[in-house]
Image (cartoon, rainbow, N blue to C red; front, side, top):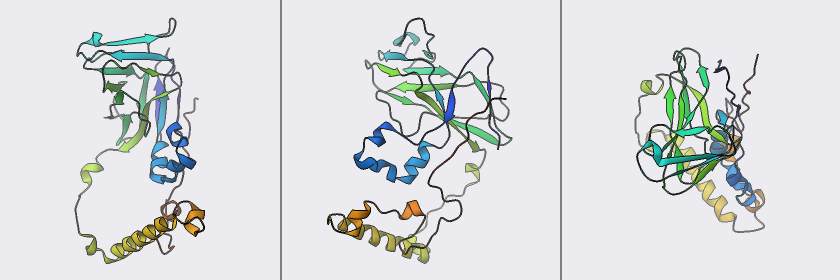
Length: 244
């Protein structure tokens, strides 16, 4: 699978594989947030576009283009502007992405990296044919609150998605009892989980020594049978964009 970023001549943009690390996760007790493997995998699920220079912005609550005021340091060009109004802050992305036929690009904000008073908006771009660049937009959630983006801070997160896959999905709901084997495995996991959590209260227990139950991380069920042997991942290792 090839993902090509055509940088528009005369512009610069730093892009990188999204890191698993988050400052708020580092600050959790014993970094326990990283024990949630789905969370950690999502953090690194794609590539980040980085803000070229520091700036701040504030929204006065109005709908006009002049309702957002952007301030940069010295004579730096603002990386984002008020383009649509209605409290939307817009980054122009000076890149035309190309994916292979049948693949789109999911575009959104940095994953699991909340920002106070402003939220990223998401879009899906058909990058296998469109000769257009796109914008990355954030919408203020509170007026009168100054926000800032630092130089090198991610403002956009992208990853390819296959077109029409969701439309081919046939969702259904069934009682768990309809799959006796799955129901048994879930019951065993639930009992194991409850016992583990009870034992955590005892400092001399195996649970207290382990700190957390690693069944999902190991791709195992409660009986120790490995279920996730095919394709189970505990870390993503994405390639960086290379220049020719």
